[in-house]
Image (cartoon, rainbow over all chains, first blue to last red; front, side, top):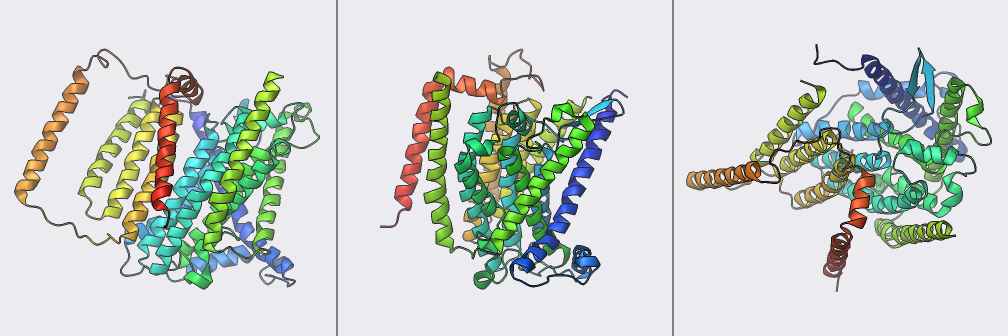
Length: 350
Length: 167
């Protein structure tokens, strides 16, 4: 059996980690849909969903059951394989990001040191970008295979918006990479946790601002939800979808929100770092658990801000969106990059 | 067979099969999607050679940006009808023969090239493809070609803006 001679314990450990993280993110996404409705209700001064269970807590399950039980309609003229592939691709691309996010430091179980990160590859943040650029295909294939003018228009809008804002996002990221000197998310977080270093937000406020706006646009969230502008496009790229395939598209948006919040927390807010606490004084397992809690708290705060913006700001017009992306965000990001590089050189020379 | 060998054969088969499907598919959108599968397989090969940076840049640039533009063009021109004109059988035969000859020349060239004689692929061990080494090589040994090509890109961008500008 030389064929399968490798570390089985490692395989089991990684599989368990993948299962926990994927189902964990799906569970959080489930309750994010609930939180979205509750936050909207609070901001609009109404009670929101409160019928299913105490405080309406079972509402997401009721919604999911409703979506599964609905009739599944595949339009007669559409390309069936691609029509089914679209939502699957959107969901896969949304979930794949979680592979490189460091959820916490390591735990020690059964005499093994288990890193709470699926893969610490030395190009971590570029991997995130690769996956994000794949996310476009879910929208485009779904919109095209629906064989509907409005869906196609929405898909084109979504794809061009994602590509435009990826540029500014990448440029604002370069400044962070110049500070930390590494592409691995684990070392970026480690750099921020080190003694005497502040979180990157202290050095990169403008970079974070640009990154946050681009993240809003990448997730198709208001005020950048042009692909779903119902007053212009009926419903958007998922107009022809029904049942759980529609659910996948809607759900992928929430998973995307969680993942972009996690990436922002890692890049600018110290990841699993707990402020004003030296984690090395604690037992490793307790430190790891507290770290997961800290990262999740940061993610929840970001998600709340996403929702707050959605229910406060009206959406842009399409030309305004493109002008903002190309004529404001990219020059700002370039200036930020230049200033950061100049300061780093000046400090290295001094 | 080790895991690496299994991965190598799997990725190679995937790349060749997808490349054939690019040619065989009648629907241009399907061709583009199969081409994306080819890029994924090639990125997998880069990862086997421990060139992670190349792998992910290949995906971001080709699969993530250029292929999206291809899809844009095909979708907007509404080419989704299977409307490729039928070519004459002699045309197909001539194409197959000339293509086969070209393949043979390329294969023999690669087999006999002095650069490849007696060399082995560094599977999973080489470190020249890692971002640190690649960056050092680009900005020390190859800095002049690198800068010239970036000027070339810049002029291409300016040209695109000038052409795309409305009068």
